[in-house]
Length: 221
Image (tube, rainbow, N blue to C red; front, side, top):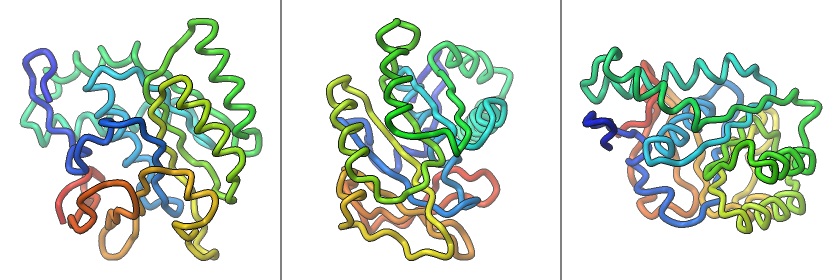
């Protein structure tokens, strides 16, 4: 992927062009497995493709979310053979195209978020092409997710959620009402490494992918 004559290798392109069609996507993961790292790579891929990106972090600070972007982009520059002093200007050029919104976990709800997003767009403060929602605790809110999906379709938004699953509970079934809402679903499954399992909507389901333990970038297993 080229920007200012620098060619960046976007790890997410191992999944193909995930922005080819309107997408309502989800990454399932337990806490601490790698959901934020995965979503930030989706966001960086979008930014490299010129998409204005809204990152919603639930339960983390703006500063922590910003640091994820810088560290991930440094790693992407590294695997692309680009020195940080050259890549840094590209990264800084992203900043006006990226908007981070932080919520406390107990104050986040889909209806509240939709109101905030509608205000951003209507007041011409920030009009995203891609929305990343990190840390949504999945409780099978099928109705709210359907309403948000319709809103996203009307506004022509690409959406990716990280759905937080719980160690003590059974993994949600892909056919459950809530998960049926999503067009693309990826599961991060920890073993000796974090395996990336494609559950729905991405063609090459048998591709062996992991998160690299040293960089947390998507790579071939």
